[in-house]
Amino acid sequence: MEFLTTPEHCFEQIVDFDYAPHFLRVDDYEGSSLNLHYIDEGPRDANVVLMLHGEPSWSYLYRKMIGPVVEAGYRVIAPDLIGFGKSDKPTERSDYTYQRHLDWVRQVIIQLDLKNITLVCQDWGGLLGLRLVAEHLDLFSRVLAANTMLPTGDHKPNEAFLNWQTFSQEVAVFPVAGIIKGATVNPLSSEVLAAYDAPFPDETYKVGVRQFPLLVPTTPNDPASEANRLAWQTLRQFTKPFITAFSDSDPVTAGGDKIMQKLIPGCQGQAHAVIQQGGHFLQEDQGKRLAAVLLTFMSSNPL
Image (cartoon, rainbow, N blue to C red; front, side, top):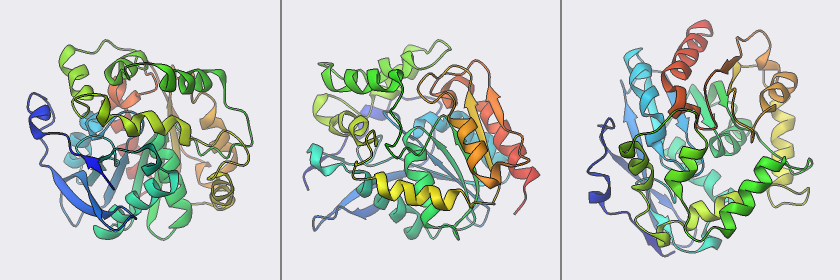
């Protein structure tokens, strides 16, 4: 598999993200391997919080949450998905599949020997994380789902998502920072916007962010539809603590929290939150508030 690696100098000007880089070699399923970057902060023997980002962000999105969670005594693992952040970026669209991304994140969990995981997932972090929860019930102990869903393609996506999907394929220059800016409520500084653009020096690095919107199941016969249906059968019996923390200003995932609360038994009795003044990327808009919800959730549901 051919791939690009974003030069390290592209990240040198980023502020408020002073976390040591870590890398794993993950199988590319074509006879070679790729470098996957992740943040690993906190005591190695502490309870693990796995933070999964989505499209088109990277672990930088969680910078406002990592500190408070580590200070509370937890270990935080925040990977960059393949094609994003400091991870390698395959150069062909066909390199990116839903299943491969599941398996790449699965390799992180296996190689780091993570157990008793508290999952925090947003956007594609949920499409991947919730599948992994269903497939590895023994490894996950708690879930916080924020502005995400596990679609099967059995229900037509809303217009906001379909418009986004069309835009992602037709726009000449994929505006990563502009997408983050357009899906947040609070103003973002030029430094923050530059940090979101940093992994992608030019369009050749953006194959993954271009392909991701097309991998979301939108029809009943999508390649991932049946597996996601099976995952929902498991999630409908998931009794471990599960909380939703959606924002008040995200038209793409609006209402997804109510579906989870209705279908997943572990949601019963939890203090589900609606984060005010938060767009789709609520970790950026209200990261400290979301961290507080997470910490209260974990302390209320000890392992």
